[in-house]
Amino acid sequence: MPVPADPTILHPMPEQPRVVLLKPLVNSPLIEVGEYSYYDDPDDATAFETRNVLYHYGPEKLVIGKFCALGTGVRFIMNGANHRMDGPSTFPFPTMGGSWSEHFDLLTGLPNRGDTVVGNDVWFGHGTTVMPGVRIGHGAIIGSGAVVTTDVPDYGIVGGNPARLIRTRYSEQDVTRLLTVAWWDWPAEHITEHVRTIMSGSIADLEAAAPDTRPAT
Image (cartoon, rainbow, N blue to C red; front, side, top):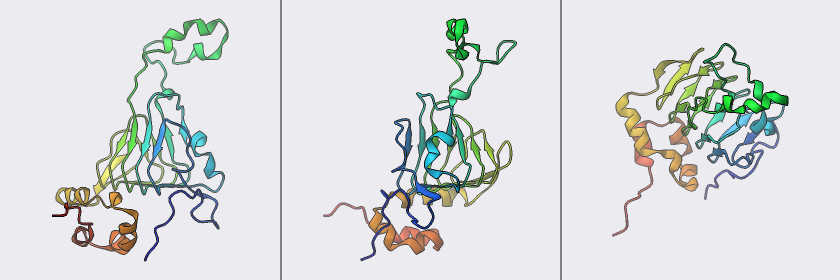
């Protein structure tokens, strides 16, 4: 019987320590990652939480789905990066200490766009940046160097700074079919049996391969 890959192993490719699975890596309660999503970095992939998730002072979360591929240098900018913009200076004086800290109320009530949420099966190219509160749909592709400032639709391809929708990978009807089949939620054993269909089959093939979830009669 085919055996699924182990989602709990930090380095799924022992000969390539630059690749890490994120779910067994992250410790922050503010970061949620689905199984098999990975990050690739030749310098220190294990430092993802500190080098790639920036200004994460809470309480908003970063949520990444299953089977996502994150290229080197992908960064998520969180809401803690916000500064006041309604006065002459944007400098955060109260954070620097001394008597300036008496004015910490000036840093409350800053805009907060909420959680940053990435769907399943999303591919991030090298050096992409995701701004606070963005939602990226299932099956999306984020081009190298893109700065994502607004939501990305399911199976959308975006690129540029700021990122713009280049095209969608499938028609609206086919996207609905793909979201219905939701292969990423199949049991790992079933995915293992149908890897070739998931990677190279048609939508009809994928639908035909879906596990039967009807209750027994």
